[in-house]
Length: 95
Image (tube, rainbow, N blue to C red):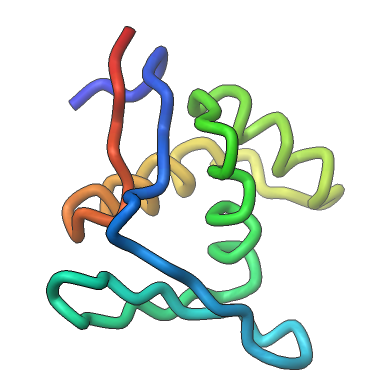
C-alpha cells in the first residue's frame, strides 16, 4: 500500500497511555484487547497522528523534534506505520 500521499489516522478502536519517565507508552486495540508497546519515538509518532498527517508531514515534524534523526528516518517511520496498519491501529486514507 502506498502511503506517500495518504492521510494516516489513528483507529477509533485504539486508545493509548503514556508510561512514566519518558518510557514510551502502550496502545490497546479495543476489539482484540491486544497491547502494542511503544518506545519514546513510537509514542511521538502516535501523538503526531492526531490530525491525520501524510507521511511527509510526519517525517518533517519528527525531524523538528529529533535534531539528530537518522537519514533513514522516513523508511523507519514507513515501516512502523505499516506495522500499526497491519494491527488495525491506524488507517491509511487515500485522497
